[in-house]
Image (tube, rainbow, N blue to C red; front, side, top):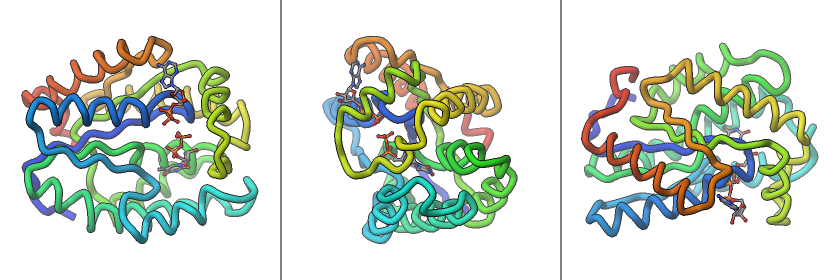
Length: 218
Ligand code: ADP
Ligand code: TYD
């Protein structure tokens, strides 16, 4: 997909419970108050078809799907989301804030049950072909993140049920991904109070809006 876009594509990544959803909402409010046209969206989901796939992948037993099948399901959801929500908004010059994107597949499906990173990357370049302009990694201690996430008591707990070991692996993996894609990643300390995290996020976003980020990697 090479449709030219004039908007800005921001993603949030991090372990479960790190504060991504909270910070996505805060950033959307801050940017709207400054006059930006913002689309706030999430993965898996963000379009009608992708939300249907979301229910299939996030509910049920941890061993419901193999990692390979999950790569296909998450990528199918992402393709629909990109076609119907993200690309039209970017083409209209909007700021798109997305709670998780392809980096989550590189981590959760690419690392958690063997090394499938190359498969994730191949399918990504074939069917998605787009990286964010800026990725905010909310980094934090996995035990605190998991207890925050469990505190929500929802039904979408399939990945949280893999336990603390998965969260530790994901934290280390995300930090290493931030080095691999250092031009577009910014790491924010998620153990700070919500307002302090939001201030760091806004600082990095303003730099990206001013054109100072890693779009050259795309
Ligand atoms: P994520 O989307 O990364 O899973 P959430 O934004 O849903 O995380 O936050 C998980 C829980 O932690 C929520 O109850 C939220 O209110 C709380 N929370 C978020 N950020 C912080 C923070 N910086 N300090 C303390 N609690 C937080
Ligand atoms: P999310 O709703 O962001 O959960 P949380 O708020 O707890 O961080 O994402 C749900 C789960 O989906 C999360 O455990 C990570 C997983 N996931 C993948 O495994 N692969 C993916 O490509 C995406 C986007 C999410």
